[in-house]
Image (cartoon, rainbow, N blue to C red; front, side):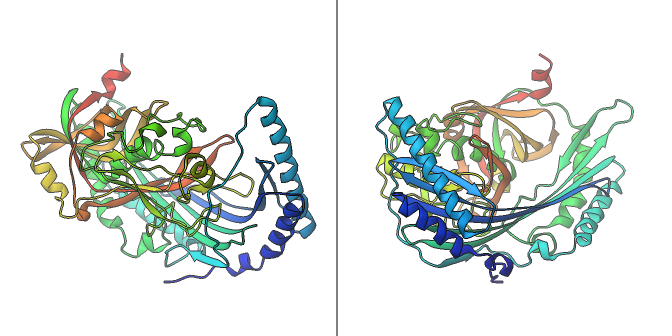
Length: 507
């Protein structure tokens, strides 16, 4: 169903505010200026044992002006929706740029801010792909559905507690710049999550298991329209959790792994997604776990993984959390290669990073999470591609003599260069001679990024591909949060180091 931009957003004085701000910036000599007005509504509901435990519903409304003046950035934001206020904010942005230019000059640096060119996109409108806006659904229906699902889990004898949550976001954005681009966009996304907890009364030992359903750029239909089999997962979770409670602890060593998309997406996020952000690779960004081992001098040379490794950056994937029509610098959404046949061939760029390093154009990775924040380079939907005629997950498992099938994400740890890492999961199944022979506990896999992806012996076919992701990717100072998806098939990795987390914790 094709949706229109919310009329209440269009009723705001979008163009008048932009015209006032951009005219003032031009008059003050800005080489470039852009205006961005946003309204971001976020709502959440939480239940504990089928009873409401909290909710929130907030709206962030405001605008920002960013300029390049004298070769330096300037930025300011405001909430007063009048033409005079917008012009004042533009003046503040120019004043900030002038001050920054003096500081840069005093430091002895000759670097000037320049932006890669982008075609003009005038009067463009883009709305994400969804059927039912979750904000059109009564709150009672949302909490009612979460309560019903929670009660299904609690009805099982092995489930002591059940937690449920639902997060929903509607993001409206208007952008205009001095080159003539103007865009109006609307994005909707949601994430539903249920966790079952089991407790052994005799020992006090406990464990939990969470649903595997990923967050999506969809609407309410994701929960009720058959896009994900919630009934099947909720029916199977109690017994899977009971089996996990009885499962033996893993014997540390070297195993072959079949990694399900519900786990592999997070490994992609941490070891590829962040590592191929060009600002990290150049050392301009180090917040939230550092820079990157995949430095710019290795472009076209670095052996990132095996020949079956093909990874794309994509701002266009339907229902992707990082999918847009245009980024926060007016750049149209694109898809491009990051890793081709195992070799690093690309990065994620904004307009400044593109110009600085000789790329002809940005690939649309500038984003700010609120009108009060400056756009920074943010992650696209970074995805591992399936093999066109590739095997099923079952076929991947069939070929393993001694291994582990990893399902669902849990904790992670990675070093400041995005190189040495350790990941756990929700469910681990022992593989013996091609057969799943029961669950294991206390499992973590450990590797370096290039060793892990170099050990990837096979990727599944399109039938195994799932678009996973998260709402809460952090970056920058002051910190910003962005939602991002990562698609991948099931994949087979050989000779991976497995740790016993219980033994490691006891050291």
